[in-house]
Length: 99
Picture 1 (cartoon, rainbow, N blue to C red):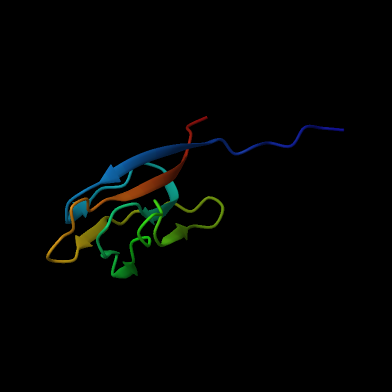
Picture 2: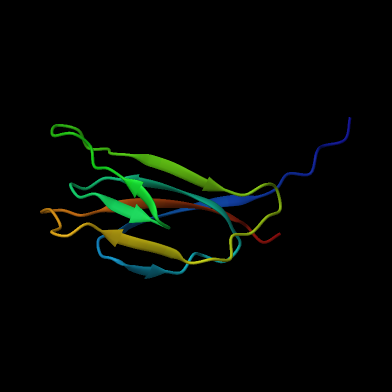
Protein backbone atom coordinates (compact mmCIF):
# COMPACT_ATOMS: atom_id res chain seq x y z
CA UNK A 1 0.00 0.00 0.00
CA UNK A 2 1.50 3.40 -0.96
CA UNK A 3 2.23 5.94 1.75
CA UNK A 4 -0.04 9.01 1.76
CA UNK A 5 1.60 12.36 1.10
CA UNK A 6 1.53 14.37 4.28
CA UNK A 7 1.25 18.14 4.60
CA UNK A 8 3.95 19.42 6.91
CA UNK A 9 3.17 22.19 9.38
CA UNK A 10 4.68 23.91 12.39
CA UNK A 11 3.31 25.77 15.42
CA UNK A 12 4.63 29.14 16.58
CA UNK A 13 3.55 30.75 19.84
CA UNK A 14 3.75 34.41 20.83
CA UNK A 15 2.43 36.46 23.75
CA UNK A 16 1.20 39.99 23.00
CA UNK A 17 0.82 42.69 25.67
CA UNK A 18 -0.13 45.87 23.83
CA UNK A 19 -2.73 47.13 21.41
CA UNK A 20 -1.41 47.22 17.84
CA UNK A 21 -1.56 45.64 14.39
CA UNK A 22 0.57 42.50 14.07
CA UNK A 23 1.84 40.62 11.02
CA UNK A 24 1.31 36.88 10.79
CA UNK A 25 4.10 34.46 9.88
CA UNK A 26 4.48 33.40 6.25
CA UNK A 27 2.40 30.40 5.14
CA UNK A 28 0.00 30.79 8.09
CA UNK A 29 -3.04 28.53 7.72
CA UNK A 30 -4.75 29.60 10.96
CA UNK A 31 -4.24 30.75 14.54
CA UNK A 32 -5.70 30.29 18.00
CA UNK A 33 -6.08 33.16 20.46
CA UNK A 34 -6.35 32.74 24.25
CA UNK A 35 -6.75 35.58 26.73
CA UNK A 36 -4.20 34.72 29.45
CA UNK A 37 -4.28 38.13 31.11
CA UNK A 38 -6.65 40.11 33.30
CA UNK A 39 -8.05 42.54 30.72
CA UNK A 40 -10.86 42.32 28.16
CA UNK A 41 -9.41 42.52 24.66
CA UNK A 42 -10.49 42.26 21.06
CA UNK A 43 -8.68 40.43 18.28
CA UNK A 44 -9.88 41.28 14.79
CA UNK A 45 -12.94 42.82 16.51
CA UNK A 46 -13.84 39.57 18.34
CA UNK A 47 -14.16 39.99 22.13
CA UNK A 48 -12.04 37.85 24.48
CA UNK A 49 -12.86 37.99 28.19
CA UNK A 50 -10.22 37.20 30.82
CA UNK A 51 -10.54 34.19 33.10
CA UNK A 52 -12.16 34.47 36.51
CA UNK A 53 -9.86 35.09 39.48
CA UNK A 54 -7.95 31.93 40.33
CA UNK A 55 -7.79 30.66 36.75
CA UNK A 56 -5.09 31.28 34.19
CA UNK A 57 -7.12 31.02 30.97
CA UNK A 58 -9.85 33.21 29.62
CA UNK A 59 -11.73 33.02 26.35
CA UNK A 60 -10.13 31.17 23.46
CA UNK A 61 -11.04 30.99 19.79
CA UNK A 62 -9.53 29.57 16.62
CA UNK A 63 -9.38 31.28 13.25
CA UNK A 64 -8.61 28.57 10.73
CA UNK A 65 -8.40 28.05 7.03
CA UNK A 66 -9.21 25.05 4.93
CA UNK A 67 -6.52 22.82 3.52
CA UNK A 68 -4.03 24.76 1.35
CA UNK A 69 -5.48 28.15 2.38
CA UNK A 70 -3.10 30.85 3.62
CA UNK A 71 -4.12 33.72 5.94
CA UNK A 72 -2.83 36.97 4.41
CA UNK A 73 -4.31 39.57 6.75
CA UNK A 74 -2.90 41.25 9.81
CA UNK A 75 -4.09 40.72 13.37
CA UNK A 76 -5.58 43.71 15.18
CA UNK A 77 -5.24 43.55 18.96
CA UNK A 78 -6.93 46.08 21.26
CA UNK A 79 -6.96 45.92 25.06
CA UNK A 80 -9.74 47.66 27.00
CA UNK A 81 -8.92 50.87 28.85
CA UNK A 82 -8.04 51.06 31.61
CA UNK A 83 -5.91 47.98 31.18
CA UNK A 84 -5.46 45.63 34.11
CA UNK A 85 -2.16 44.74 35.74
CA UNK A 86 -1.27 42.09 33.15
CA UNK A 87 -2.98 42.46 29.76
CA UNK A 88 -1.85 39.45 27.71
CA UNK A 89 -3.04 37.22 24.91
CA UNK A 90 -1.37 34.12 23.57
CA UNK A 91 -1.49 33.42 19.84
CA UNK A 92 -0.53 30.04 18.41
CA UNK A 93 0.01 30.15 14.64
CA UNK A 94 -0.25 27.05 12.45
CA UNK A 95 2.09 27.50 9.50
CA UNK A 96 2.84 25.22 6.57
CA UNK A 97 6.44 24.08 6.38
CA UNK A 98 8.16 24.41 3.01
CA UNK A 99 8.83 21.03 1.42
